[in-house]
Length: 206
Image (cartoon, rainbow, N blue to C red; front, side, top):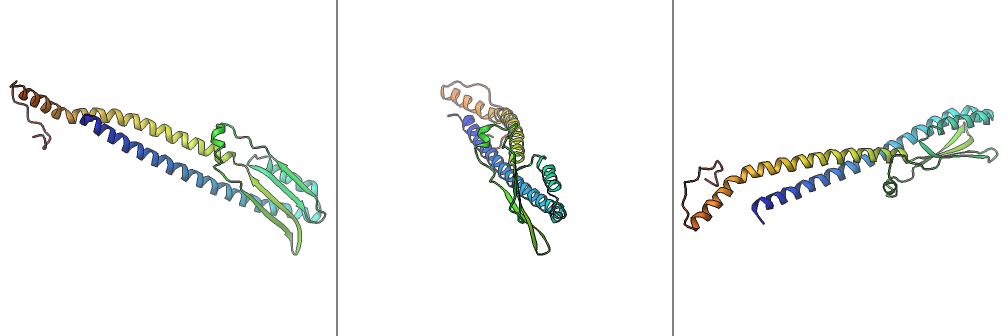
């Protein structure tokens, strides 16, 4: 293998290692961020929904309570909401099928996001009125992670191609004096004496 190919292979391997590390770092950081974001959103939603439902549960206004849950649920960010009245044991469940648009199925099958759910007890003084449980929908996490990874890979691929072009150009310029020395030495070994070589700029070659 020529010196040019050895140097080229080494730099290629190092660049791939750096690229792989960056992709892995971006992937884990984005996934952890989205997990925290969805967890925080669930906490905020279940707290605010509990406060909104309390006065209607105290008065037994079931219709208004269900309407409030419907408004929250139709936002599409939650897979399942369960409201259970503790007075009579009545339970109302709202469910959304897991449909994730714009993300390939193989990526979803990796199960990158665990099921997140929160449960809260709604009380009025010492009286327990109802329990509410909200299960998060993973669509937002998968869509954001897929978008970020696509953008990251596209940018890194572009940088990789540009780096390879610049690298080949620079290596050709750097190694050209060495190539000339090799040709000159070969000619001398065959007793072909020509003009002296121009002194290269590289100290080692000088």
